[in-house]
Image (cartoon, rainbow, N blue to C red; front, side):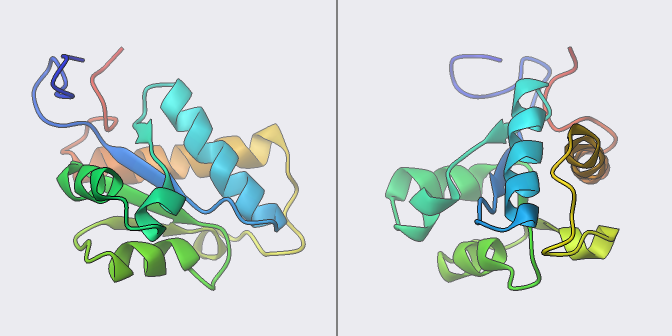
Length: 136
């Protein structure tokens, strides 16, 4: 990655905003986003910063290519925060859509991996088959 935030292979990096709610699915969404960030699947940013209307957080999310919002439960706070900030054209992963339910989702490494894999798949499809960041 260059000093300008561009991938050395061309294009801006993916940004991931995740619900970090108190429920089991909030924890899983947060841990999956952190795992993707560690594995260079995108750059996790701060959803609370977008909600607080911090200019740098909003501009970073708007400039992301692509932006992925991971929501734990159907309330979709993450999606609502991003939309309220005027951000459009983002990817949205709602954990209920992949069979995870609030109150009955195991907080295991395997569950976190499954969510991260789905998110990576979505980012790859949005960036033309890439993983959302430069290849390792």
